[in-house]
Length: 132
Image (tube, rainbow, N blue to C red; front, side, top):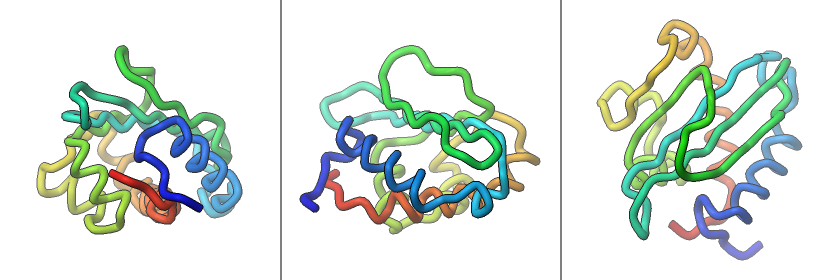
């Protein structure tokens, strides 16, 4: 597979395909949750969002966009470069949150419970050959 442009529609479609095939509801602990990653300072300027929705552990939506943020239980905001490091498995999401590179808005207690699940998500995304 040729590398895909990170956060392009082609990358999003491949991410959705891999997440649905590799992360079973059992592996996702049958969670029902939504999370929006907000990427600041994207190449070319501006910001983008990537929203994940899970219902009983199954991915029901992986949306990519700009502009008004979708409703989500959690909003995680950070620089494009920080998310790119996480997607390349060069930086852990928990470390990025704890060091202030990422900001979390939402229920911190539930977010901590979902940390291992977020790591599983990021591991799948890190497997997508991408150009950043």
